[in-house]
Image (cartoon, rainbow, N blue to C red; front, side):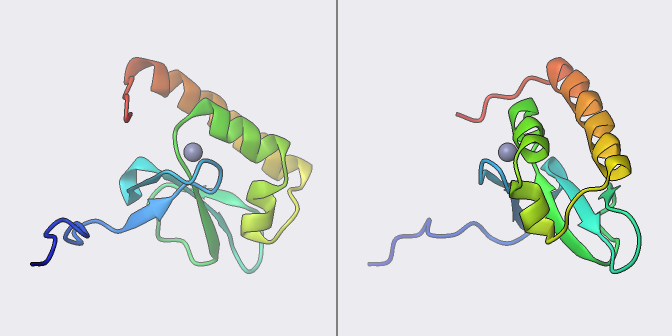
Length: 106
Ligand SMILES: [Zn+2]
């Protein structure tokens, strides 16, 4: 007898938030990419080449991502001031959006 529910069928690629390690649908997470050349940026379509890391939409994860080396480590980089302010700006937008669509996953 095999347990049937060991893994969901792969329709959407699953990604993991680098801070809280929540696994989620690719679209539910924000991809941050560090291209081989140039600035770290938010990759909303998930298609830019480069080293990517994912963050979920929780404000606390963005705070941790910006306040600790965890995201920089995931991207194998150190944020410049411009990159940091880009991410901070994006984080504030996410927090605003998050308030309108409250989702409880637990
Ligand atoms: Zn998270």
